[in-house]
Image (cartoon, rainbow, N blue to C red; front, top):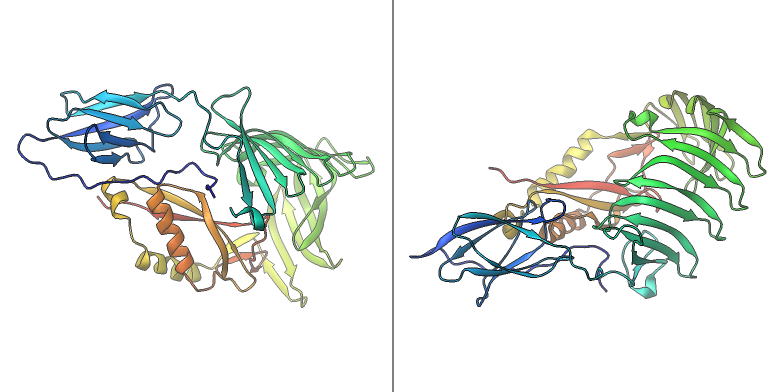
Length: 400
């Protein structure tokens, strides 16, 4: 099955060391329209099997002698033939291909944890179409296996970045939420609805506010249409789909203020927290045995345990030779789910860097057989859910 991403696994032949008459040339590939670097491309000396790739900044190098023409191919761009100039460094501008993306119209299947899988084990699938108004973007529609639409939204060219209008649906087909994303973050005005079609909430997401003030609740109604929050003031409820059934408390000027109580699905109190303008002041949570945990951060970290984990990564991770030679460096973001004991259940690439670096990052994560007990939520060890995966950056950095 084709993976739901835009990475290519490119081949690389070793280029011979320079001999008499040869010269080293350095080129850079950029998008003609934007001027930005092209990070995926194959460059081949015409009439030979000598091939190379670009690094994350779009640069490549070749040793040439009598051959002075190359072909350049890159996803979503026209294949071109280029005569190498006499200068040592040169730039090539590529033009977007007029053909549709290789992903358009195909189904991509995912399991319970939103990991790619085959159709037999799938719980949902995605269909990609070209955006009708923005040719450089895509519309991605999510469905469950009963053909019920879950959401439709706009993604950028990399098919990872939410970048435009999104609509989310309840399982009965009623609209659940709608609003805009920019660079994977909600922005501007958002609306939410109950399953019965009743308007639930009007909120506003700020791009440049502090983390505690990103979301401002403006208006809120219960499922019968009774307005509980007006112009940012009133009583507010938060629905949950994991351990907690719901949480409730006061909203003042759009932000959480005063005492907030979270209730478990059993009906028991799961936590009691005190807020001031969305900032947590203090909290007490309870586990299944009603043991109390105090905290002043929703998410907290055990630095000693984290240090052991990263020592394992540093000791066992291997920088791919080809990636190193092509000066590729940056972050691979791994999405993981962990069980109640802290062991890794699943892992996948959430955002890649290079095919070789991606593979190495996954290899080292899957090799780790210890517990990830270094993350706590509300004072208790954090167990991930489908709605709350853990994202981990794996850094590849060259030492110059």
